[in-house]
Image (tube, rainbow, N blue to C red; front, side, top):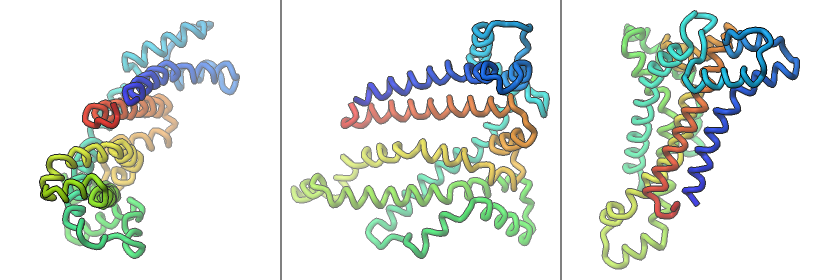
Length: 286
């Protein structure tokens, strides 16, 4: 069953790539905007007047497949170069934040697995405080301590702030899975046969935790990409979130569409990779 799901995901990605160039052409035929504006302002293409919709589609599809996404209206630079530069800055925050989230969340879970949860109605609200509040708090703290927040320390701040809520997610997932395991018949059976707790986890359940962690990795990545602007903007990091919002403010349609296209492809590829890994390590998904 899982193999078919993987095929469906790949087909969905291919169909998405094929459909994207159709959208501006549909706009033209619906008459909601002038063809010249859509072709030049949105597709960022220079085509001769009277070109057929089919040739227009093929040209747009060829540009998409070759990652020729045109030129940014605001900066005059290649859209793909702008996206590459933005992703490079954002990955400096997102990748360490993911690592920190999993390590710290798991560590807290291990330390607290036999104790009462550190979260509850009195504490959970901390993890739902808007990210921008933490960003400006760190700026205020840096100013009071005389720390130059425009130096490399800003990336450290951004990583910490971006990982606050994911740490909470990983911790709660670990605690939930741990209690599910120790209450399961599988665990109790092996325990009753004389197998030690550490051996049960080492030989059988480490892989299970890895499978469960993969199940929400994609959601954490989407969360970080979706909210990264709120750490990039206060700390003057010219990453993907900052560039995307700036493109919206400047009506930079080629850059906006470029970021959307790359994001769709990126998240689809992550989904396919995660699904493939799960199908290989989880016997229940074959």
